[in-house]
Length: 74
Image (cartoon, rainbow, N blue to C red; front, top):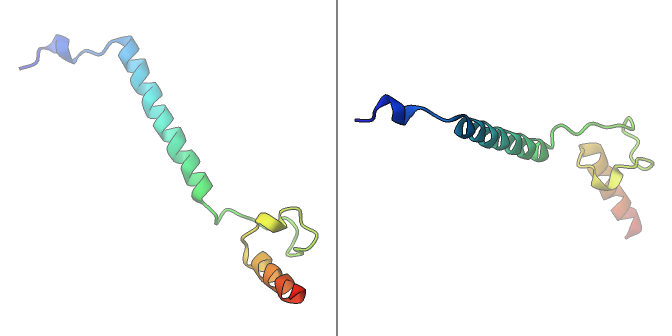
């Protein structure tokens, strides 16, 4: 059986545990934000050609405009 003294956590261990779990939460949240592509919003009201984000945009309007532009170039 473990005695009560064995279960006590030192301040240093406690702070290390908090830091470890805090880091895990931050990393998990960061990965979640990076994987969330639904958070993309149109900043140019659907006018894609003059938009600064056009090349990296994955919204349906931008994908359609990219497809139309590639057809014109061929």
